[in-house]
Image (cartoon, rainbow, N blue to C red; front, side, top):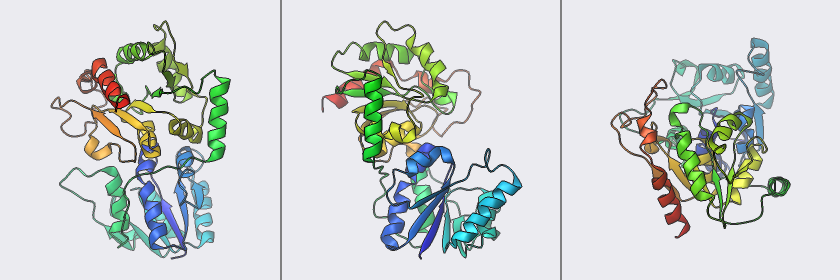
Length: 339
């Protein structure tokens, strides 16, 4: 194969999980060119994968919402004359697009009754908890492509490192270690640790005069961060909204530890190789736990309702996240820093 399209998934953490796919393709087809189609919001992750040669933005809910916009993407795919498309995304629409683009080999899971659009359809695995990364890698393996290295790895470029060091300087953040990143957000509230716990955690971490405590995130996290930090006498450095995705990954690469719930930043930090503490409640680490090259410590308590991944977003108790104490996190952080 000379030209391969990978139709990727929508979320930052899942795109990190997909990273081994590109290396495996390049090892099996050394001369191939790999293009990845994915939402623009995950482009920064893809740009940290050296085996991705080209990126096509596809934003189904924004830029390419209408039929004409989708047709434009289909025509672009047709002009590229791909030999094969590997569909990691389970979407019927994306399968139809690669079919209409005339890509001769179309490999993916037979979900949402889209099997008739695929030339190599795979039955989704059933009966056991399969890690999300292994689920994506199964698309390649079912086609006979071996995956020798299953660990997600992200590579940070010199330009991004230079940019983030400038951002640190502009925000008065010294080159002091240990640098601990505390990510307080999550893509749904059920996965969030209680705000008061984060306040107490930060209060304890900030007492260590030798450590730099930094809160990364997006602009959308700023309201939550303000609620958490307002009671603090000593304030952490807040970089939420001040870095793009590539710069965030670069920041992680020059930090020592990230504390986060099961969210995209947790998996980016783990894939870039730093130590992480993952606060897991409703989700299962067997399915969405860190798989990268960094050392990961998972904190989770079995409370009954989270024996399987829980998606009861209207839960009023959130006992699975409340079960993790501030002492649990501080003890884990102390153990990590002393080893």
